[in-house]
Image (cartoon, rainbow, N blue to C red; front, top):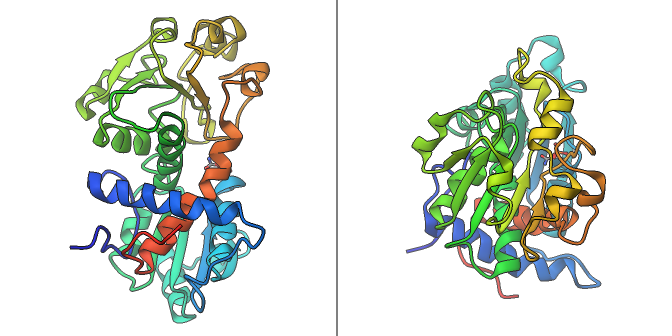
Length: 312
Ligand code: CP
């Protein structure tokens, strides 16, 4: 039995522990490619990838492009403003046209939850979810988990605190699903308006006091406030948010020496994280970005039919 038989990656919620582990192990094998002078393997030679981003992105779009190029695929980038979505074409029709242009893989970022799943059920091309509204961002979840596993050698038994705007965060959901499947203890921290108790149904713990988790956490993963998805004010002001939930320098001094400080980016310096902490010795924020290439190589390789972990 192969460890991976899917053509799409739409979320971590639907993956088994074995499938997540397969992608992490495949990413570990591909990470070595980026450390060689010749950073290319022929695994996806002859395949065409379309990066279709209907929302802005720096890290995800660029690292999917770099990942595809390292696998020798051909890459086309299109954005919402440069596409015929502007003329009223539907997402489905646009995607069917990309398929008619023989796109083997479509990487989609879209503001609508479920958009990737919708296309995956209607197209033969592989669909990779690069963020669908506040639902999931599975490759970000995988690269976060990959980075933690690389540092600690395991996920099981670690205490991961995810701090900030959980309600509107697709990164939080993918992290929660993946980390819990791999045996981590997950605590969600933030104001009750942005971290409702209902998240406990997923198996995570909920806390409204960041100071209660600092000394015990193995990882603190900070999230920015997703103003673009909020339709009302969820806390009185940024000053109050920083004083109650920001990872300030005095708070960072209470972390265990080995605790990792993480952030998916883009960071808002001086809001969810102090600038010195973001650049400090416990921060792995830029390592997360680098690991995104290996993780996305693994996802593209797997969804294109690579069912065995490649030799390093
Ligand atoms: N973390 C993340 O998704 O960043 P981008 O929006 O820049 O892709």
